[in-house]
Image (cartoon, rainbow, N blue to C red; front, side, top):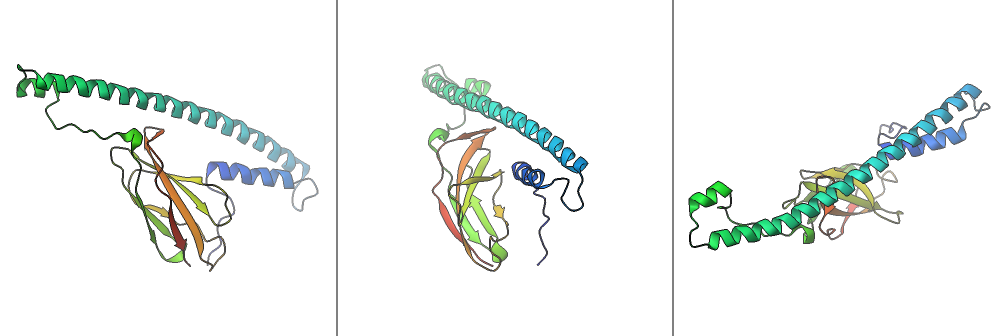
Length: 204
C-alpha cells in the first residue's frame, strides 16, 4: 500500500505538524543549519498569527450568521401569522395571494428543533459512507470520533449526501470503531439539534 504524504493538507493539522517540525529542528539537526531553524521560527510565527486571525474571523462570521438565522426565524413567525390573517379576510382573493406570494401551502417546519438522521454504510478499505437528510437546511456539519479519541472532532461540511470518510485505518489491517453525529447548518451557523450518534466498524 502506498505511503501517505507526510505533510497534512488541512489547515489546523498542518500548523500542528509545523509546530513539531519547528520544535525539533536545530543547527545540529542533520542536513539543517541555524538559518533553517530561524526560517522555521519565522514561518511558524506567521502561521500562528494567520491562524488566529482566521479563527477570529470565522467566529465573528458564525456569530453574525447565528444572529441572522435568529432574525429570520422571528420574522418568519410574524410573516406567517400576518399571511394567515390576510388569507382569512373576507376580501381576500387569489389575486392578492399571488401578488404577495402567499398563495402556496405553508411550511411549519421548525428548524431550531430539527435534527439530522444519519445512516452509515461500511465499505472496503476502511471507507465509511454517511448518508443524511437536509430538511430545510443548506447541509450538515459532520463530526466523528475513532478508537482512542475522547471527544468528537469536526470532519466536514456537506451539502449533498453522502459524506465519504476515507481516512486510513489507525492500524493497518485492523478494524476500528467510528462514531458519527451531525448538526444542520444554514449560512455559516449551526441550527437545530445534534443527530443521534451512529456507530460503524470500519473494516480493512
